[in-house]
Length: 460
Image 1 (cartoon, rainbow, N blue to C red):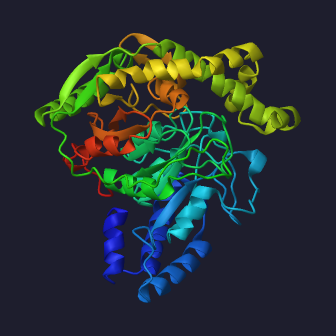
Image 2: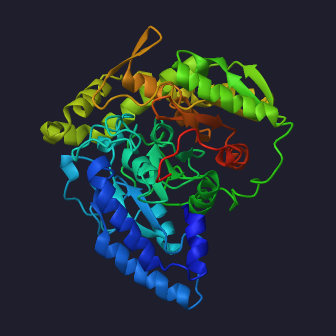
Image 3: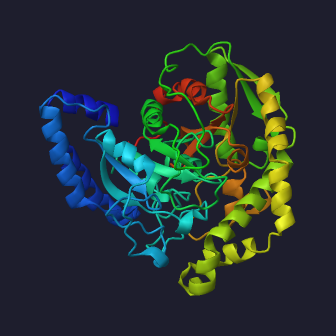
């Protein structure tokens, strides 16, 4: 059941917030030992908040569709009085004394923080199997990765522990695990959702985003979270927007672009699932057009330089003082990041707007872009090489290849489930749009939420 259906049942007094939380905690206690989606479970805090929500709703004070709904929070998003570890030994006992803006907004809407979701250590990895608290496991096959770094957020939603979760996306960390776990994940326009109170990976690339079972839920949650925050220097001024407003708009006549860069070296089953989605769009009157993205190679290179330089800047002191406490793989990646030269970073920033403009020129001829979210199926935990039809690639590079460009450009991207492999692993496609055109992505993606799944799980 999605949270909109739950919210309706709560309003109709068919179920109480306390019962909802108790049911969620029961599921978490049953499933989390298998999938390791949560680092911290906030049982006492969640039940106390549920009692408050129940009293408010009984008195007719309904705050909205998230009132009384349990939500998982990625464990590098600060939660007042609740341990926030960043998936690392360095912060295993860290307890913030304030809430991140996104958590504050959820609480004001009556949502209940039920736990802190596992993450690739410090969010510096798209795989999801490098956390001090152990690897997160895919609900469709526990031997496979969830993708990362918002690994626990995706797994918690996919395994029906929660209906919604928050993640962050710097190179694809909302969209990658959303695709790998068969949920809906939005990376909004850069600066649309405040980063205040979120441990940084890369200051100019980090994007918080919602992860949900359905497209409509994602739109509702995005509407709640978006907005200017003066405490975040990268927050953008924007008018309050309802991202559900185009859900029912006819998509006939829209133009979807297929950029050739995003369709190179794709596993066969992924390509076939995405092709089926494209065919559905064509059947609904959408024009499909192959396009080229000018400057895409420069975008990819500049994103890599930016994340490396900024990540090392965040971790410099900890690396020098407590390097032995990092996961070895994350530590090695940070040491490699140190090698980026200052002039390389400056060049990447100087040409940023030019590259963004070149990238965005494609939207003069199409409404949105459609691509696979990731080019491969979820790999085995600890696997580091993949063979894509004879093309050998590091798993990390493969996972990041199709999502990282838009973290540099700041364009919104939405990952939507579009089928399963023969072995039952989820596959997703990605819609990319102009800055601040999340509602258009949601409109087009809503179609897929109505399609029957190829393989059903008892908890999906």
